[in-house]
Amino acid sequence: MRVLVCGGAGYIGSNMTAMLAREGHQPVVFDNLSKGHREAVPNVQFVLGDFGDFNFTLEVLQKYSIEAVMHFAAFIEVGESVQEPLRYYENNVSKTRTLLAAMEKAGVSKFVFSSTAAVYGMPDTIPITEDVVKVPINPYGETKWVVERMCHFLCQTGRMRYAALRYFNACGACGNGTIGEDHHPESHLIPLIIQAAMGRRENIKIFGTDYPTDDGTCVRDYIHIEDLCKAHLLALKKLDNNTELVYNLGNGTGYSVRQVIDTICKVSGKDFEVVETDRRPGDPPVLTADASKARAELGWTTDYPELQTIIESAWKFHNDHPNGYED
Ligand code: UDP
Image 1 (cartoon, rainbow, N blue to C red):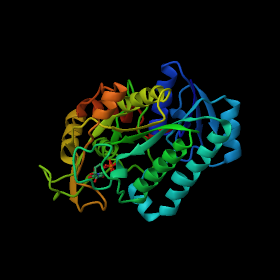
Image 2 (image 1 turned 180 degrees about the vertical axis):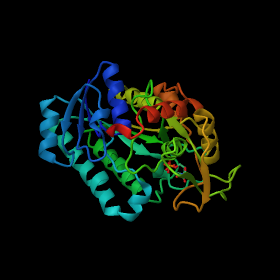
Image 3 (image 1 turned 45 degrees about the vertical axis):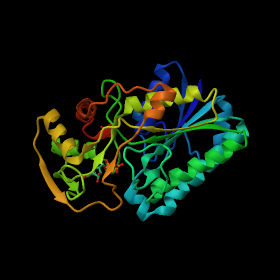
Image 4 (image 1 turned 90 degrees about the vertical axis):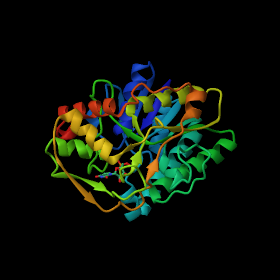
């Protein structure tokens, strides 16, 4: 299938592009390189441009006879979204609306959307099922939820079919650790700890040690990027016979911040300074997925559920790219 990968030079998009190509699809990467890395894109068609540009996006959809769109081009920093909500609404909502309008005009109906567990806010029940009430507590989660609703209503017209995939904590690097996480600035736990272990960061700060969890630190559901991408392929296929799909993607197992630190110490064999600091605003104590719907309906299985395996792949990527892709 000819698939336009919006944000295909970013962390998840580039891993997805590699998998699509490997599985015999024809991905076309569409990225403005504002955050992504040209070096992360495998040897496939690359188009430099912005999905917020209606005319250009329409041209790209038509020129490459695109049959489906996977959309990863979003701003993803919770803290930044609180500081700059309008930037998030502009990039994550307005521009996605333009993309959908161009798809509608081009007659491209299949859309796989990168959503997030942040749509749930602070859920009362853990693990989280898809039907839990959605009360996002920051602009990032809200913008993703708005797009899901936009897709839902567009789907009702019969002019689009979509899959919204709600990621828990995506991490790790694909296959042999060649395509990994390189954000500027970095804000995600695993790459930050790895940087500390590599001596590239003075210390790692734990944001809050007084949560109602076993060791007082936040618990998250870490899902290997390769397993995450695999679910996209299954969802894309399922869109042949379905119009609206929504799935949580996580392992269902939670690890605390301290457990992640300990695992990185073990994998790296390095010691580094750990500093306990205040809570980060907007962090729920525990977020783990009930992904039984994806397993039952998509036949999705995870190959790398162990935190240690995930971290080993990330560790390899960071050691091979100590300055990220810019080396
Ligand atoms: N975290 C931390 N120190 C850091 C970065 C993150 O203690 O330097 C914690 C954060 O508060 C959260 C967990 O690690 O509980 C995962 O954070 P991350 O930003 O990686 O992902 P999120 O769960 O926010 O999507």
